[in-house]
Image (cartoon, rainbow, N blue to C red; front, side, top):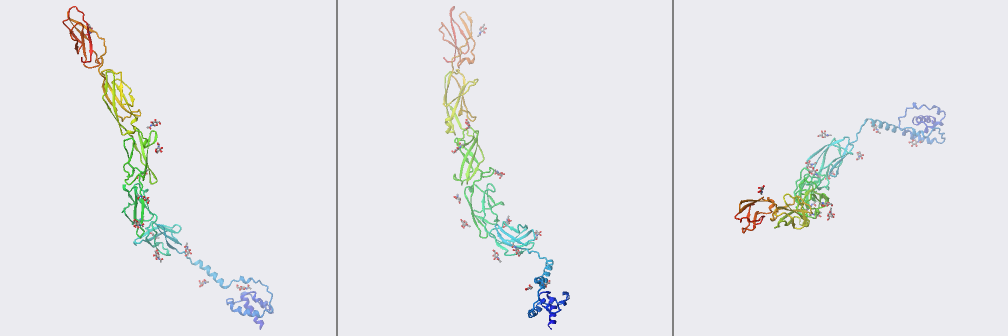
Length: 515
Ligand SMILES: *[C@@H]1O[C@H](CO)[C@@H](O)[C@H](O)[C@H]1NC(C)=O
Ligand SMILES: *[C@@H]1O[C@H](CO)[C@@H](O)[C@H](O)[C@H]1NC(C)=O
Ligand SMILES: *[C@@H]1O[C@H](CO)[C@@H](O)[C@H](O)[C@H]1NC(C)=O
Ligand SMILES: *[C@@H]1O[C@H](CO)[C@@H](O)[C@H](O)[C@H]1NC(C)=O
Ligand SMILES: *[C@@H]1O[C@H](CO)[C@@H](O)[C@H](O)[C@H]1NC(C)=O
Ligand SMILES: *[C@@H]1O[C@H](CO)[C@@H](O)[C@H](O)[C@H]1NC(C)=O
Ligand SMILES: *[C@@H]1O[C@H](CO)[C@@H](O)[C@H](O)[C@H]1NC(C)=O
Ligand SMILES: *[C@@H]1O[C@H](CO)[C@@H](O)[C@H](O)[C@H]1NC(C)=O
Ligand SMILES: *[C@@H]1O[C@H](CO)[C@@H](O)[C@H](O)[C@H]1NC(C)=O
Ligand SMILES: *[C@@H]1O[C@H](CO)[C@@H](O)[C@H](O)[C@H]1NC(C)=O
Ligand SMILES: *[C@@H]1O[C@H](CO)[C@@H](O)[C@H](O)[C@H]1NC(C)=O
Ligand SMILES: *[C@@H]1O[C@H](CO)[C@@H](O)[C@H](O)[C@H]1NC(C)=O
């Protein structure tokens, strides 16, 4: 009975487990040789649990004589369990037949100046994003490229609610599609964008904001042209941004001067005066001397000098350096040439036949600080003379050694620092010296007897320049006669009714004096 049972167990055992447990029954006589090959056993599909329990109990009962174990225990692990095998097969077939692409999802996130869409598992390079703002106005931005799985939508309106309606190609939204943009913190007013204009700068789109107090209308560049009264004042405005995000903004408007083509760049003018002053003609009326520290310098032949050192009659290029708003503005250059006016008036001049005493007055206008530096260069000369003038600080000058009864051109030339400049007016006057003694001219007297007691005397006429005076008369005086001297315009005298055989002496004189 035990032998039969033992065989039964052995068979079962062989089918299930080749070695260890079944080794118990090797004690049965002759039974070891009857172990059939494993292939012959047909009970493999039976669940082992049903068998093992009685087997174990049976083994325990036979444990009095345990046989030596000749097989490795470890081989227990080499047998794959039926469940393991089935699972492995399932896995391998599953991965080959079921393609599951990563699912595209996106989130809408708030960023500065707008929102961004953050993708996960995107399989497109660009997306069309359509969104709308509070006014329910739809906007679509097409073909936005992904950068690091992100698409940014910026330049939106601040403090506004935006809703992402749809994106194409499709992708699944995760989280909230609606958000409220941030407040505007970057708004600035700038005068550097367009000369002469004030512009606002922000990365937000505030085209629908209202600018109040004052009301401002901006051009397409977000600028408006400044006018005179804006400069050197604080420009303030209230920006009414919808969404209760209004702001107050203020800027001190600096003078625009860099560019001469700009309307408000300084137009400089100088007075024609020493000390010279430069006036900024179009200086904005609200700019005070505290706002504008102006320093003018002038470029002349001797380099750069201060405006206060400008000399009259020299050409300079002057420009202003305006320190304003801790910025330096160099104005364009203006030509400066101060021409002082000198008015010379000749006074009554005393004249003798060989001298002239010249007197004049000198009036200097526009250059009063330099009065002492003006001289006069005077000369009195005849038409044919070439005579240097004489420079004097006085206002009178005597000329000696002149010819009597001669026209002298007396001129007074104003000079500055002993130099004559073309703009200075020369005053000249013709002064004729007083009549003098006619030249002593040796002339032959031709005596012609007309009767025994009468004769005529004829002489050569004096040349006009030999007379030295007007009222030219020939005076003939005969000795030994009571007759008064004859005074004639021509040198032709007739002497009659003389005594016979008497010597007479006739003297002929030239006279320029009325006698
Ligand atoms: C055989 O394997 C089972 C399950 O892994 C384990 O519980 C048992 O102890 C092992 N038997 C031997 C003899 O190692
Ligand atoms: C193995 O695959 C079959 C059929 O595909 C299925 O019924 C079974 O549940 C799978 N087993 C496991 C463990 O996945
Ligand atoms: C992308 O999605 C997967 C699956 O939903 C998730 O495990 C992963 O963390 C996500 N990655 C990011 C960056 O959110
Ligand atoms: C994006 O918009 C353009 C223009 O409407 C359209 O031609 C294109 O097909 C759109 N792309 C997707 C992915 O919908
Ligand atoms: C989405 O965001 C908006 C605005 O921030 C908020 O009013 C709304 O309650 C949010 N919705 C959800 C589902 O969180
Ligand atoms: C700014 O917003 C207005 C409408 O509010 C729109 O017409 C305009 O095109 C926007 N400008 C830019 C640069 O996006
Ligand atoms: C303009 O504003 C500045 C600083 O806010 C202030 O110092 C200055 O006095 C103001 N100027 C005028 C003219 O109001
Ligand atoms: C802007 O200025 C006005 C008047 O000065 C004031 O009533 C208002 O509260 C200010 N607004 C902001 C946002 O500061
Ligand atoms: C002056 O303005 C004109 C026109 O606005 C511009 O072409 C020129 O470059 C400017 N010059 C300087 C020095 O800024
Ligand atoms: C220029 O310098 C020279 C030499 O120092 C001087 O003689 C001359 O008067 C100067 N000219 C002017 C216009 O200042
Ligand atoms: C101009 O005047 C300033 C101040 O009076 C003085 O410091 C400077 O040296 C002067 N420059 C010249 C070139 O005379
Ligand atoms: C004087 O008479 C001589 C001889 O008759 C003559 O040659 C001469 O020219 C006359 N002179 C004058 C001044 O008439």
